[in-house]
Image (cartoon, rainbow, N blue to C red; front, side):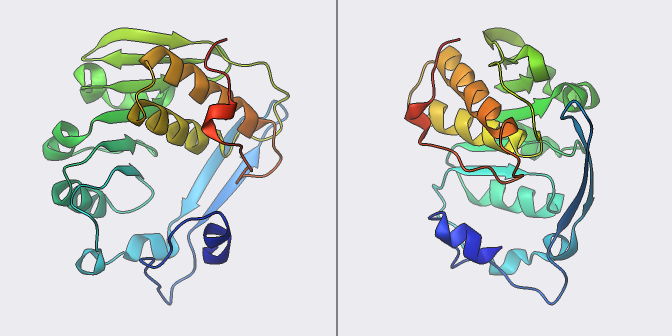
Length: 208
């Protein structure tokens, strides 16, 4: 796992190691490409916040397959752009909710987290219907899905989240960033791997 990250250009020097098993997701993919996931957190559940070293101005993209206390800690230690893929849906502290600049959720997660209705910025993925972006509860952008042969949707959410975060950070207009993220997500579902190999963000179309 660590070698794979390193080969992709990720700095893995701060990765904590644990004697417990690597976190594992048990994934069942249906005939239409939709999936159900059961997560066994393993080492993910044993991150020691005392050993986390992070630039206080770092950009952060996090999700909830690690303990909420870890996410809360990192949010409190940084003042840079903070994006949270609130998956799997879980209760959020008031401090975290106020700290997050961008929430990314699917329809089910959005329904389970009513506190996001007036969040600063929330992207909701709609599967084959694309995605919508809300600012303080008001729709500011909507993107269509990209036609793609659906093989495996496991990596789609992560790919979408990364693409949207990077697009917004580099100054893309919200509609363009959202549409490009949908294009990246479509490329991910067409790849049989749950960790799809993707091109540079600029190589994906920002219009339907």
